[in-house]
Image (cartoon, rainbow, N blue to C red; front, side):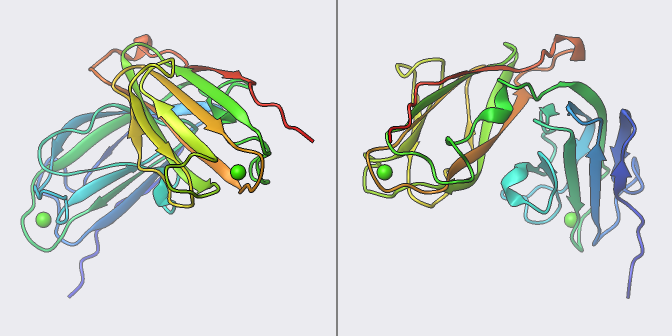
Amino acid sequence: YSQCVKCGGILSAPSGNISSPNFPGLYPYNVDCSWLIVVTEGSSVLLTFYHFELEYHTSCAYDYIKIYNGISEDEGNLLGTFCGETSPPQFTSSWNVMSIIFHSDRHVAHRGFSVGYRKGNMVHSPMGLSVIASPGYPEDYSNNADCSWSIHVSNVSVVTLVFWDFQLENNEGCNFDFVAVFDGPTVSHRHLGKYCGVDKPPNIVTTSNQLLVVFKSDFNIGGRGFKPNISISISTSTPYDKLRTPGGTRTPLWEPRA
Ligand SMILES: [Ca+2]
Ligand SMILES: [Ca+2]
């Protein structure tokens, strides 16, 4: 028994549509589709769902779509897994590549999904989001580092921080070297987490459009450091023209000491 469903592919036009096989009819059983969206370098990809109706399971174990901020081979790029009838929010990638995976199992099919994408604004600026990483990354970070990055995006957005590499000196309480994340522009805002060691922090989502990342290291013992992906998603339905280029500033508070 085999089922040959042709689906997936690489999309490189500045805008387009993707839907599950047979849409708006029922999608077939046992399919795996993979779409890779690649737009002009320096641009982002904006994703908007028009229809979403997949078999529901509490952890989306049966039928699902996965959306990646980049290539799907790297699970660190995963923005979310979705099933049921709750449409995913609008997503914007933090670079020019985005992937969508669709999977269905052998029972129960629904009408599936239809999603549009379009090329968005430039996302990488020299002082913008792309420079968030431990100093010298991927070389070992310096001792006595004291860095902070303040991220401020358009006020209809929330920020998601996904660490895809993380290696800091470990100690209980993370008092020696650490990354701390705050749900707002300053350290007085709600503390979202403090991390060290080699376990990747969980994905962090702000409740507002501002985020502060602080990195400190003490006088000895380092590591490769960290590099997060930042993605911006829209917290409410919004016309495309309200989406602004995410801005970011880096405050060079760290001074490597000899
Ligand atoms: Ca199913
Ligand atoms: Ca240290």
